[in-house]
Image (cartoon, rainbow, N blue to C red; front, side, top):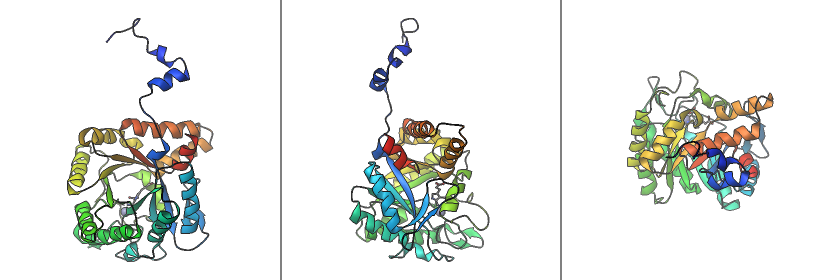
Length: 323
Ligand code: PBG
Ligand code: ZN
């Protein structure tokens, strides 16, 4: 490689046209997925205090947000449910008339161009707020698999394109794949939250989804933030069990993981820019300490540059409309 004065990298930075010509990473609306929080009822729109611009909505209002996303050419939408009633086993998670199931049906009918993804987990539906059933105060991995499979199957029946288990139980991808296949849903994809860390960045989400654990925390099943080799084992296990795509979460503080997963698997990789990442950018911008639009775009481009094919982000519609 030549060096200065032969090599002058600034030559190709002089104008926007030159910069555009040699830009390595691009961000397109189709690579963004919008998370939404759906609950029963009509005309409900409840702002989430720690996430400006994010609301819990009934299905009719969710459709308005989905229309705006589709208009901005956002690629997909991921649904989280906020049920009216909770119990120890989270039995409303597979209710055919649940807000998520009704929301999926409405989306497939009204806005067929949006990819519909559903989050599969028990924490929004259990009264104790953990991602599975409890036995002697601990989450019982194997007993939870059956419940997750039921929830995923109800989402597939409603017409979801992709089901996305976020619970971090061992063996859940295999269990879900088996029950989808047995019911004939061979074409419903699985996006596994394969490397999901026990992160403090989920704080605002737990307000949005009303899913904070009543006792203890999630460190017994989500990953230790210090571990990268283990993330690769998690990802490879999920791929072996039948995951069609894998997700890393959170995104910004774990870009090394995004990069390794892409390089070492070649599989479609998603990254989730989580609630805390979103809230921090909004809060700093509100104080006038950063330029919101530029930081939003830079944070998303950085996640793409690390290797993510698509990004789940609360900025999806806003960012897409500016691209
Ligand atoms: C549920 C789930 C969580 C998130 C996505 N699915 C919260 C958690 O595990 O506590 C976090 C998303 C976000 O913070 O935006 N298992
Ligand atoms: Zn959960």
